[in-house]
Image 1 (cartoon, helix red, strand yellow):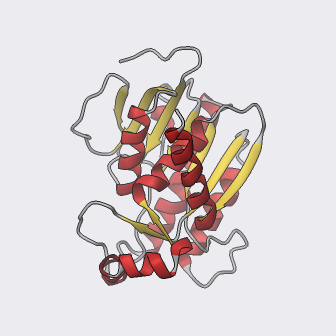
Image 2 (tube, rainbow, N blue to C red; image 1 turned 180 degrees about the vertical axis):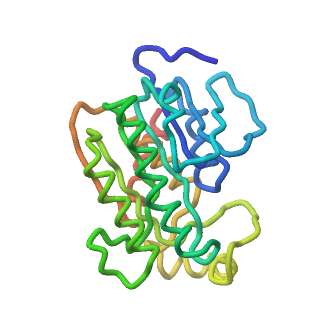
Length: 237
């Protein structure tokens, strides 16, 4: 495994076997600003890379065993989650809220100065008043992260995430949106974001060089603007 230079960042990614997390992993491994990537996964990734350290961890209800692996990290990209309807409501809250809070607890103890990029969702409601369980649970997780003590917390609230690569869609709504994506993107550009673009923005936020303490919410429009800035910066390098 590579040893990061003094100006490179150590990044941990949770959910790297998922759609957005998978793109975040690829983006981080290709990013010169990232010196090492620790992927916390429940099943093997099946890839190898000089920057990559893979840590198998199956029970996110207790992340205490991850304390050593999470030591000395500069940032985290947290993409662990479940689709509404894919699991019972009780399990959805456990995955969305409890797992996030437990991971953040251990990361904060091991790397208190780490930045935290969190994959939330459009409509996330920190007041807990939303009628949509997904919105309430994402809002509850957001609120907990903001109170966890991390110096920098970035909450990403994408609308429809376009998968980019073919996959088995989780429900009818996603199948429909994928089929009409070209038209939907043209009519409602701020209601869609590519999975790879979203992942890149989350990584960039976690590894950006800043001495400031800040907490920011990126709605879908903000994520698109950030992606445009990343692309422009890449063109001028």
